[in-house]
Length: 318
Image (cartoon, rainbow, N blue to C red; front, side, top):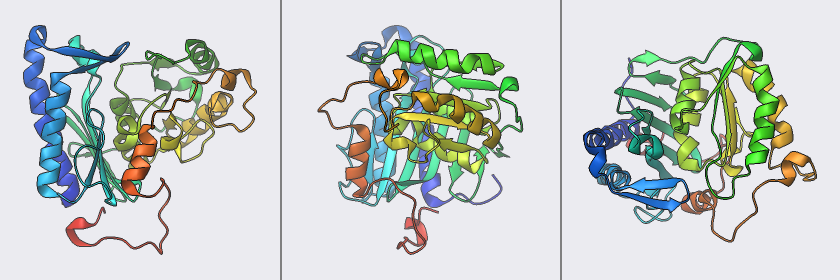
């Protein structure tokens, strides 16, 4: 990366590498790994907790007044009412990790007033560092990233995810796959959404779609894609995807074609009597991760207007 890193991005890189070192050391002794189950098919290990703690300590040492929203500890750490909120997944792809399947990563994003401004996704198995600052482009190590130039969906390789949590509706997913698969060259599911999004940014994939993801799964990767020239939204093409728990991404041409196929399966269509929408998950009384993020930043996710006050110096997000 030819330009100097923004101070906050530099801290994110340091935190991600610290977590990656913990993950790499633990990968050498998987047989003695302590594994707990958060819910059916949803695992957490002592490595998740140790990596998350290392990230939080690195961030709060540099920016003690910032907020934290992390997968394992939620909002336990950091300031509760800061405009700056770090969104952290210490080990995206835990199931892959505990099986020795080398597709997992660390994902760290910084949101300012609900809008992601800095992003890092680190693949410790390959020492691949994906990063972006809003308005400054996206990079893989020192290489500038651009999304794929393909324009026809039938020539495209598309990433996705499969349902595995309780409450996921498998039949809904099957109908979604049936709608997409005949129109693409191939469909892939490695199992780490943050890396999937980076693969779109790098042009390895031409597009990506999935439902049921949390902000820490997609916050960093979404900025990396847009800074690489791609588009990200929900299944109807709206930009408030982090509020919807559904995401589609891709190069501009492929994105539009995927949205056209996926719109009937959107959870946010107001007329909720379509067969696809009728099988959406039931709401629960538990506070959603997005609601927690909105409380943490005090404002809902939105586009910032030119008239908004912005920070300056080292506290500026860009």
